Length: 444
Ligand code: ADP
Ligand code: MG
Image (cartoon, rainbow, N blue to C red; front, side, top):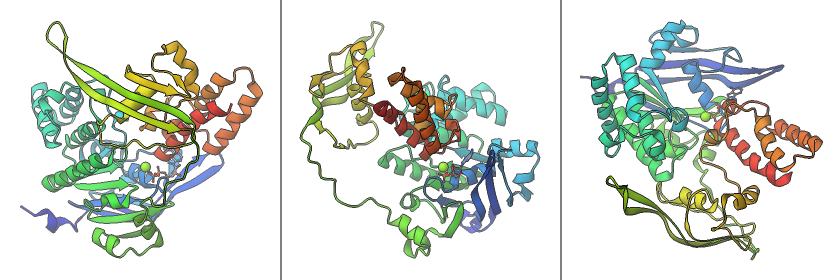
């Protein structure tokens, strides 16, 4: 058998002079400009650059997943198995997409079906692509979940996506992508939505799988320091161009391009902002959220998961308070309790008023003042509404009687963001939109 090391210079897929343009009415935007790179067999190639630099558009071009004819390629070839994927027949592409090249995304929730168990979703792929019967598929699904190191894989088979943590969902996505034993795995920011410790374990897992299965990985990330441990080579992208490509050690030891140097030094620095306010806006006293664990036919409570257990803090007006901790440590639960979206014990005071005992109806007026921005922007933006409608909904809540003002504000905001529906936003833009919706409520 060949060692993977020996093969690492044999090209699997070559991108040659690729450009991508998006057409919107009169405007043509060139998102990718004449880029060339090769992914070799058995290697991990990292494509790194800030949000909006053209990484995802490049990845989507490989599988022709762009919104053609609104997207077009004024130049370029993507050569795989001697064929140009950009001009290949649809049947060939379909086979490549399903079988040879798999893709995983930043937000697993947008790719997992919330209504089906994990077992059903992975089984379906195996039955469709590998011609397995239900029993064979279940056995293989269990193997795949074991391979991606999910704890208690047999039990997890019957879980629904919402019952899993972010890290577990990403593992399920990887298991799904591996079901077809692809030659190339495209991982588009697979860990961006996860916290630091989980990010590392997922990347280590990808590295381990890549070595064991001998596949190639195109790893997309905005964080150059994160890909350090797993990538063999790195392409640095900026404004649709590749400004530097080199082996991973080379990039870190001797970065050539100023932009690469900037990315390497992109760790946040500086001193905390001084704050002078002494007016307490939010305070909790011994806040607890305990989820009961029920057992037996009478569903008696036998124990509790103490998600939040005795937290007291105060937040001053104009201050930012960071709550930091591992996945599962209770950060989101704390947020939900403050928003009064789940039941909690202990005191919560907002602007001096105790809000922990308020009914849903009494809490409603406070919803304008206490807003939330979620981890997954796509999960909180309806794909069926235009940006104008999403912003408009927030404005309407506050401003029913001023249609002209409403209209003007909507127009201004759309100028900032464009008029697309959320799906055509990239992650960065979607987060901005999410931030703007509550802003509208506070300004109108
Ligand atoms: P990255 O993945 O590096 O964050 P993208 O590849 O998603 O960046 O985006 C590159 C550029 O292409 C951005 O300016 C983005 O707004 C634009 N773009 C991406 N998808 C579309 C689309 N469907 N329609 C119009 N423009 C798009
Ligand atoms: Mg992207």
